[in-house]
Image 1: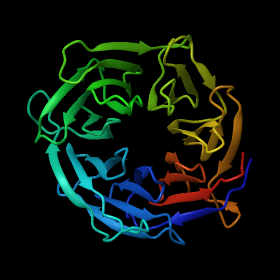
Image 2: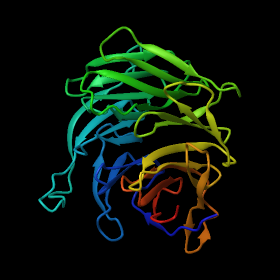
Image 3: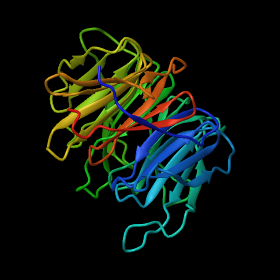
Length: 340
C-alpha cells in the first residue's frame, strides 16, 4: 500500500458528493450538501477556494461538470434544479479576473406528473450544446441548455433511480448524435444510442456472466473504447464498447466502489482511478487489469480512523493530482506524479 501526502481542502459544511477538474487543470469544482459549489485554484499554494456558487433553489448540490472548453459548469440539485454557470474570465497570464461565477440558465426536471424530481448527476455533451441529467424518476433527460426549459429527449427504460450517466467522447462530431451510458438501482447498466430530438433510440443492457450488478458509477475512457462500471460488490467491470462481450472484472476493493475516472497520462498510458467504502483509492491499468497503486487517505502519516466513505475520485488532466471527496466534508488532493 502506498503512502501519499494529502492536502485537505476545507470549507464545505456538509458532505461533498462530487468533484471535477477544469480541462486546463487550473480549477477543481466540488458540489456539496451545503447547497453550494466551490471552486479551488490549483495554481496557488494550498489550493485556496476562490469562489462559492450559491444555488437559488437552496437544496443539496449532487453533481457538477465542466464543459469541454472549461467556460461553463453545469450543476444539479436535490430539488430537480439544473443550472449552467459561466466561469470567471481570465487575463493573458491565465489568472482569474474575478472570483464570481455567473448563472446563465436555470430550469427544473419534472416527473410525468409535473412535479420536481431529485437529480443525482448532470453531464455536458462533448459539444456542450446539450446536457443530460438523471435521478429518482428513473429517466435520463437531455436538454439543449441554450433554449429555456426545452427537452430534446427523454430516455425511458430503467425501473429504479438512475445513479449516474456518462456521454461517450465524440468532440469532433457537431451533430446531435449521442451515446450515453447509465447505471441504476434496478441493477442494470445500459448503453443508449440515438439522435437528440429523434425517435429511434436504441438501448443495450450490459450484463456479464455473474448476472445483474448494482453499479453506482459509469465512465468512458478518453477515446470511448472502454466503459467502466463501478459496483456495490467491490468490483469494477471494464466493457469494450465495440464488442460489448464479457467484461474484464477488476477485483481488490472490499466494499462498494463509488466512483471511477479514466485518464490518458502525458506518457500516453491509460489509467483508471477508483475509490470505495473500504477507505482506499486505487489506480489500475484497465487493459491488463493490473493494479498500479493502492492508497488510503493519509494525514500526518496515519490513516484517519473516522473516515468511512470516499464518494468520488478524479485525476487531473495532466495526471499529476488525484482528488478524493470524503464524508468528513473535505476534499483531498495528492500529488501522484511518478507514483506509477
